Length: 425
Image (cartoon, rainbow, N blue to C red):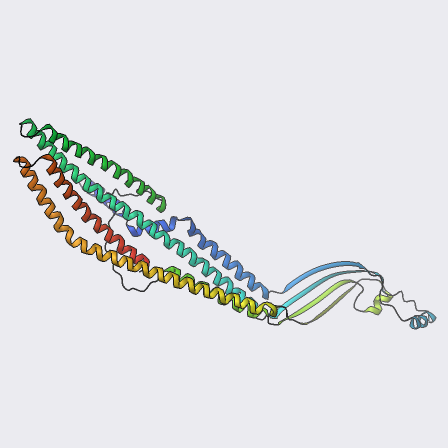
């Protein structure tokens, strides 16, 4: 007995754990969507770009080698050469063929802020790219919601159609009994049976559509739906009417990127200072007199401080800044357009919610009245007051009223969640 109870509890626990709500489907779809991998790639790219910008402060080393032949080289004045020759001193002079293997080392002292600007650009670009992925994944939420609520609507249609079939089967059995007792015509039996077959045919079509919707949702979430019927979500509450959509964060990230590029343009026109050391092994050396007397290779070097200033950057600075100003204005326009469309969509959802709330208030009473009329019609049919056609009309009216009530309830849920998504609350 204890073992059976334990098994039952495990089964119930597994069923509860495997239930997939709207929020679970949203989360699974987000994790399963291929674009989620972009976050990791963006992080890696950001780190590489920041690392490259930081390496501007690592000493830069350049190795070079050259061999040249010159048409002329430095020589002594003829009078001085004659004096040296007269004193028995032979000066061959600098040879025309020259060789050099050199190493140049440079260390930034101040780069005008360009490396800092490049780091800021790398960070801003990564933030902007992440915000774009956020927007794409947020749009995915609406697609999942449409499928989820579509399945709920089809579930309600199935339930109401099954109720209709049960009512028709009950009345068909009663009509056949009446026909056997000579109280009804065969046409009455045929009319109810035809309506029953039509309802069953409609149920098959609904089941087919529902299966398609479920398969599409399973593709989005990347796992089979574990429950035959999805959980109907509770009515959400909206804390405020201020929109917190990821698109607004994307526009802000775009503005930050523009500002980082503006700083880079300002840095590009600043002078740069660096310390350097140069050394080479070759011929001729820095001691020209020694190289005139001997063609042996020697080690040579020097150290110093260098300033470089790209004056040409001033030529395009104004235009580049103007381009960024235009880009900033474009972002502002895109934000205004988004806020306008977002407000319009919110107003549309508000109107839809108000309409559905008003309709639902009347639905219960309508269903109750339609049920009373149908039950009275069944009694009238039994007494021969009406025929089967009138009864079928009453049954159809009751089923339509019940379906309309359920549809309005789910549509209200969907509209409220749509407004919640629009405002990202």
